[in-house]
Image (cartoon, rainbow, N blue to C red; front, side):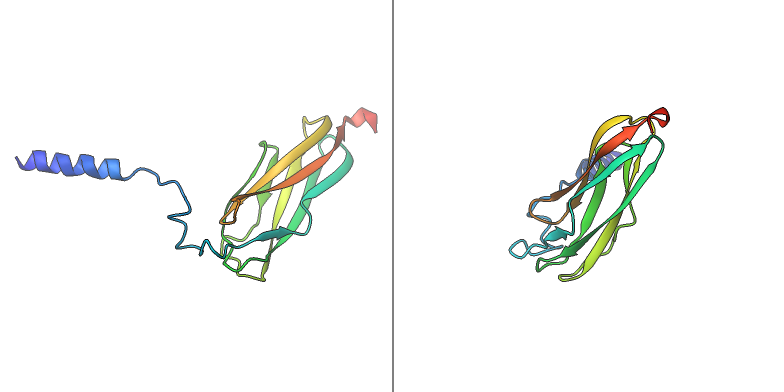
Length: 143
């Protein structure tokens, strides 16, 4: 009998440990949804021009929280594995404070016209803010 009760509790515990999707209802302990933070980028697009394949493009994007609540960045992702984000604040950015994110684009194997997007997911409305990188990559024999 004790094993049955223990098994029941274990099963109930396992089913209660699923992941919880962040929604406006359970995000309110991070911000007040009536006064959300606002991420304002100094620039949301960067044209790196024409570069030789193998060049690593590095760009720092700066932003400010112009909203009233603290800005919390959950994640920053590139549109492909060749574009990565580094060095952004993991701590809340208070109203009026600034932050930045470093973007690195590896041009190896990317000959041609390129458009890459970086998505900043934060506790803003809407949750996603996009940064756009554009430019052309040429082979070493085309310079």
